[in-house]
Length: 238
Image 1 (cartoon, rainbow, N blue to C red):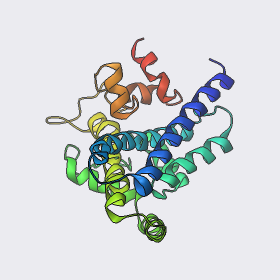
Image 2 (image 1 turned 180 degrees about the horizontal axis):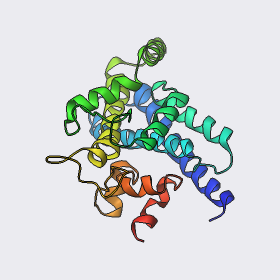
Image 3 (image 1 turned 90 degrees about the horizontal axis):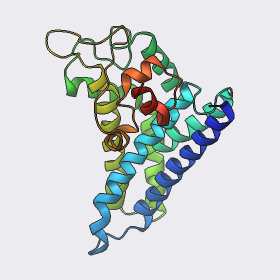
Image 4 (image 1 turned 60 degrees about the vertical axis):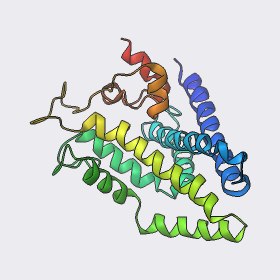
């Protein structure tokens, strides 16, 4: 596939993911009624927004590897920052540095996304994963946006249902399917195929897409980090 075609597909998918997330975010925060029968669609809105939020991180992840727009580092950085910034005021530069360190030392000491002291424990690992990236800077910006939303007329219940809950769920989604299950130690020690210390979570194509945009195909990703998320199933079939 040519770089131009990969860029066109990647940017189109990124626009659909980001546009879908932003539309649901604005609708849920400002317009979604919380009375019956309109409230019946709330679970679907929450789950869809959570999935699209995870997708924005996957788009930014492809940007970190240069696979969103091959040969165009500035465009990758801009799209990546827009995605993670809109999601929760994250710094693309910080995430980028940590992620490349993760690839240099995957699943062992020195990996910022790995809990070396508790390599099989869910809660300590997730807590470390969360606080490593969501610091005081991010908290201050999100708080400022929250205040602005309230001043603009958003209701607290809508903010909780259609901003806070989807954000937490998508963070869990990314962590479980993109970090913990692929890199956790099982039993008495590591059981990985090679030095990448990563495993693929076997599941059908649709489940792979819905869980974490095929990022559960983690061994394939570590073997070919410049393959974009939407082409990972091709590697799994080889």
